[in-house]
Image 1 (cartoon, rainbow, N blue to C red):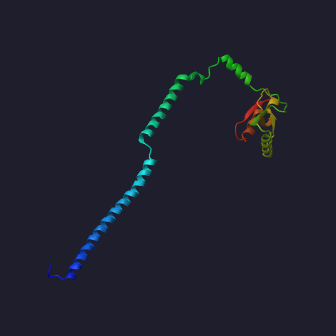
Image 2 (cartoon, one colour):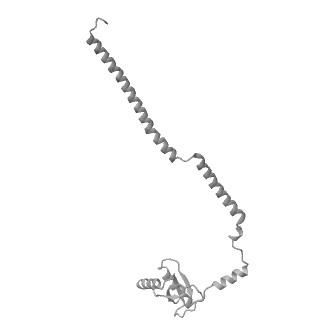
Image 3 (cartoon, helix red, strand yellow):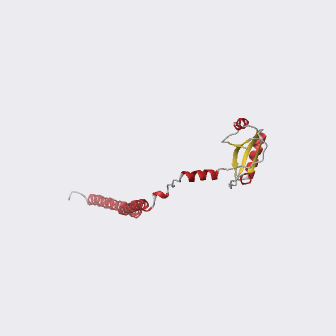
Amino acid sequence: MSDKTNDEKLRILQERLAQIKGKQETAAEESEQQEKVIEIAVPEVETLAKDKKPIYSSWISKVILVGAVAYGIFYGYKNIDSKSFVPERASSEEVKEEITSTKIEYNMNLEGNAIAIVNSFEDESLAKAMVNDLSVKGFKCNYFFLPNKSNSTEEVYKVFIGPYESLEEVNQWKQNVNGEVEILNL
């Protein structure tokens, strides 16, 4: 060492000090980066932990739901009488009596032997509109209020075409009307 001058010694010493400082700075930067990574990762873990429900609570709620549904089915099976959903069979006499009592008898004073009922409406204005449409198409037609012209209590307006002299004539005209048609003999 004696061969080297003081300036060279000083220069070598400064280089080594610079190297040591550089190593310390890189070590400090690495530790700061690790701390930042840890700080960034920690909030995400905390938010995930807050958002995620424990597994056992969802499992328990599913078991409770399935149990409640099973209990409801069991309760219904044991306590609801299936016969209440099936109508009782009436005797043949009761059925015949019901059919004859529900048969509608018309008391219409029209000149002719038959009419064809083409539609029913609860609103009189709709019945009038259909009569106008059929009249424009060339049909003899009209409407009536069912309780006034029959033994029925159903409050509807019936639109009919006719009256016609024979059933053949009614059948010819009804082919020109869309939908179901009920033919009545007068």
